[in-house]
Length: 315
Image 1 (cartoon, helix red, strand yellow):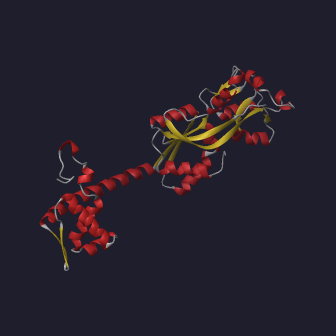
Image 2: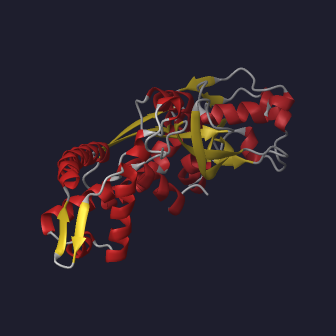
Image 3: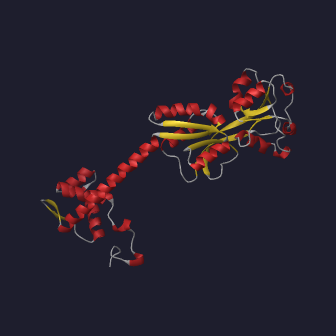
């Protein structure tokens, strides 16, 4: 008894008992064209390869399917029956392929992105312009929020791809570092720290009343972890929900702030804010793209991820 005739618990899987689509398409081509050689040519394979494929299918099914002669190839009685079955299988496969294509088209027609405020304001616009040039048919929606909110949106399926700041990949997600960003302590020119000749000790920064982003932001997380050995952050002077609000408060002299170098580059260059050096305190953070665990980005999400790695920005 051959392995294809085995029954019971040890019966081979359906995939091993049923010929694959390539073999079924070959049989249909032989039936249509009346010649194994013409069938091979129509399918773009060599005649020896086609013969081997046909013989393998006959062994697999345990019946002769084609009678070969110098005049050509004709189906046996069993071959005629199998051909009708093959036709239905191939038609079903074509319907399956068309459905999968429709799903891909639907996927490619939109991209939902969630991003931390720093990435959304200072990096994503350039990436999305490049994506638009590559995929003009894709509609992109962007939701900006803190890193905790972004991770939640990606986990829930509300976003296809997220961008966060912080020290690690949020739970339940996979991710890749796309760049690095440095946090700066900044003050208005009138603030006493603006005139310091020496770097600010970390302990003094920890004890200061700062203008800060809200809990859950990547900036707040990195700063809190960096100042942990020095007692952690003190009571904030102000807690604000956007980078722009924190920056505006610092410019008006409300108090010191800690913000992304990307966010304050113009203000530091024009002296509306002064960057204050902090001694022996690394304030560099990773910027990450994140997606649901085990689901590698595809389609527009994959293309956007590729752009973040190839373009300029934080690096």
